[in-house]
Length: 584
Image 1 (spheres, helix red, strand yellow):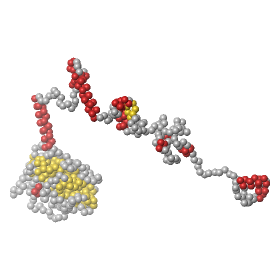
Image 2 (tube, one colour; image 1 turned 180 degrees about the horizontal axis):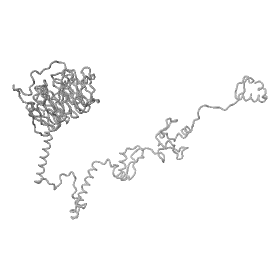
Image 3 (spheres, one colour; image 1 turned 45 degrees about the horizontal axis):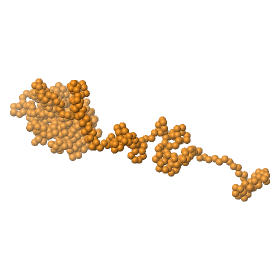
Image 4 (spheres, one colour; image 1 turned 135 degrees about the vertical axis):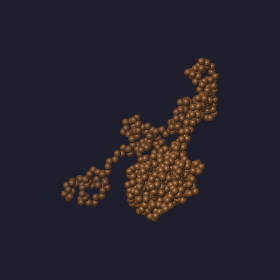
């Protein structure tokens, strides 16, 4: 370093000293300090295009505010804030408009803040009167167009004509039309319908009343035709209301209707009583009744004793069969013209109800086979039930295809009540709570609970997961309802106040979807049974809900199953193969 310092001349040292003095640099030891070499400054910051900043700062007094910018680097005036979006020429755009400001191929188009009603008003006013409000005027009532017409009409528009002006115009129009009518016209033109004059003279409003020249009285031929048509319509309506008429008849197939002691053939045997309280699952077939030419839709044991069994066939016939002795058909009841849908005994079994697809409900005498009465509403009855109370055996309830439950008094033949709340055909009627209430199910996938005699639903049960329930049975202890759900399971509902679904009890395994397979209980309540679509009869244990046994009963659908009321191990089943089978 010393050698480097000596190499400089004295003049250089003097010049350096003067330069240091000029820059006010305090070099206390010039001999020991290193030489300073000036290098170009460098920055790691990125280069910034300051064109926008320059544009913003320059001419701030007359430059409008860009509506899309987020920062305003100066204090704009009111005029700048409310100035139109287009402004002075952009220095880097050919037509003076920045690329971001362009919204049309010709440049920038500003939206006009004007309501359609106001535009239509001014447009129509201008075309009618020749003047309109000036849309470019910032304030004041400035108008464009015919100012003389403006003063004459007092600046009214087509939408705010004064009421007196409207009345005046109506009067003028009326006078004009009257003057046109009173003008002298050619008589030939008045008589010629092809001329405008005839149209003016004969024009009438469609609301002017009855036209003249219309025929008011019918001729004899027309009266005769009208009478025949009305009679024909009345007959059709009556037939629809009453259902199809068929002559009622019955055939007795037994040896004699009364025995040597004078007892009727329907009288129960004296020794018929339950042997014990325990029920057992049947294992084998003991008897088959065959007599129906088509499928059997329902079976019912004679109440309390079960010495006879009643069957409803799709061959329009109802048959009653002996169970204890001969095992033969005792009587056939023929009174329906179409398949029989449902049957129901009265409490003592001396009478029963039948419901057919011919829209008739018939009340039969079991012993003689005579029809006591017939009921019809013109709709198909799907289920029939008598009130179980002994003092109300004259009250008939029927669930119809028109979504109603109809109540008849069979003594008078009159409809006494209609329960109309369901949204689909009614499938079942089940009395609960000492017969004060009844539960109905329907194709609308709901259960509804009614007070007997009051057509108001007291409980409505409908969930998104529910299916239609075409068969419901009451447990022997009357606390539970078993409902055959069409999603291949049997659901249990409480008959208490809330009618809740018992989620712990559910019986499944059978295939009943699409069929109204009957569900039933054993008399002691220990077993649940049901038919299915494959001809099987299923038995479940009530407590464990497990499948106890299945029997292959029928070819095709096993639609009905009934447990014998006295003989605890015997079950009857019916199917669409036309057979009724008895199992032990």
